Amino acid sequence: EDPQGTILETEGLTKEFRGFVAVSDVALKVRRGTIHGLIGPNGAGKTTCFNLLTKFLPPTRGTIRYDGRDITNMKPAEVARLGLVRSFQISAVFPHLTVLENVRVALQRARGGSFDFWRSETALKGFEPRAMELLEDVGLTAYARHTAGELPYGRKRALEIATTLALEPRMMLLDEPTAGMTHEDVGRIMALVQRVAKGRTVLLVEHNLTVVSGLCDMITVLTRGRVLAEGTYAEVSRNEEVKAAYLGTDPAL
Ligand code: ADP
Image (cartoon, rainbow, N blue to C red):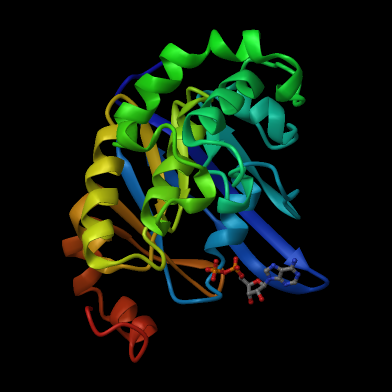
């Protein structure tokens, strides 16, 4: 395997919903070790792409290769075991458990343990050192004993990233990690993404173009399900078609 090469590649990736083409003939190439942005106006097909890549949805046509394997027909759990992991949605955080307990449960699930965590307190204790490491990675050490439900929103997203890291991903798909955040939280999450991207590959869907320009090595711009442009932020933000697609939707471009 080529350490500098492509880790994820799609060919002709297409998803139709009852005749409506949400993702159309997408050729996406993500290089190992990079932070790759997937951007585009609302309805461009970004979420559908994520669902296809993580096998939450079957493609209508096309192929997906990850780390040298054809994963087109794999199940979500198989893909996750290969290290291609999507950040959990916030609903996957258990609000009544503490922050530490949430990460312990995620670790237990990642290692194939059962879901009924309350029966195996001893087993869970074994995960505590690693759980504390992960909390440190995402800057939540001080919140370890807090109930997850009482965390401020930005910290909840950090916890979500910690529970994703419990799966030891080699490639992480992050779906709008800064959505709905305050300016201060955005800065913290950017630093966090940069930190967790070390030694990994990240595919990032993000609306905030400051975040995109600050984090992404490469960017793929989607509109109406198609790839409109690809390149560095400087390249795609100069692209007239990209500007037109974003016109009126984002003043930053
Ligand atoms: P984005 O994430 O870029 O905003 P989406 O991938 O959510 O875009 O949606 C792309 C298009 O596909 C939208 O027009 C959306 O309405 C449509 N779409 C997404 N999921 C479904 C579905 N399950 N059934 C029908 N249409 C869908």
